[in-house]
Picture 1: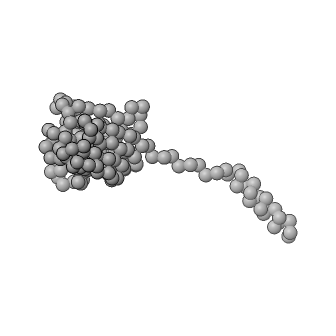
Picture 2: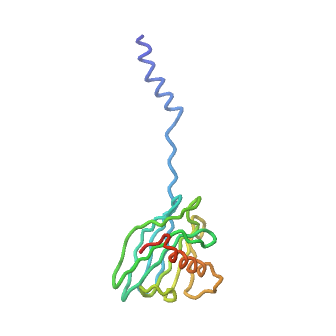
Picture 3: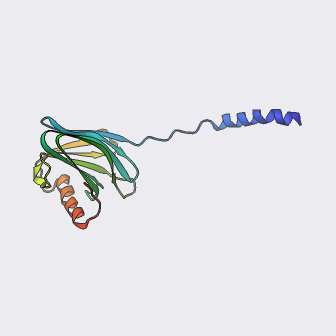
Length: 170
């Protein structure tokens, strides 16, 4: 009987060695973006989750007011969710989540930077479109673009999103 008690720890530790340590969980991808307009900027990180993104950001207005609008979309510019951040003569820092109710989550996260805090879409000056992973995860665009540009589709679809009352927050 004593041999059974002595062998139990040896067998248990040998069994544990055969199993090895538990595998580490993969980290969620993180994308950095930076939009600068004069001395003002919107910059931060996008953390990509299965059906949402987390935005950690700073919007800084060197003078007057600035606004940033955020959108999650699929590959065809269908808007899932949106948010608006304003700052006047200072910084607005924070974290928020945007939903992306689709298998695999958002394909793109868009950030539009406005020179004032009005809702007039003609006052934005730059945008960035970021996608999950890839060698160049973010592409930057100018204020002026054609009607068939994906950025135009996002703004059109965001208008439809706001009209239905689905998603979006400020």
